[in-house]
Length: 85
Image (cartoon, rainbow, N blue to C red; front, side, top):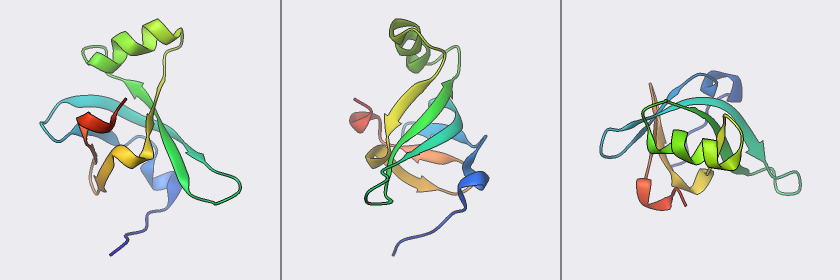
């Protein structure tokens, strides 16, 4: 069953992997204008996470992960590390 969340409720949510690593916090979402489906999640990575290293390589302070990697959203956003790219 699909669960719905209001986009502004997702801003600031902590993002963790299924193995418990905290990756950072949600900053924004990317939505496909043609289909209306979510394509990606823009994250401000924790300085200690592997995503922080990726953010430095990409030249910005933020990292985009595919929405397909999101498994669940409640108090935190849980993502599958294998699908992070």
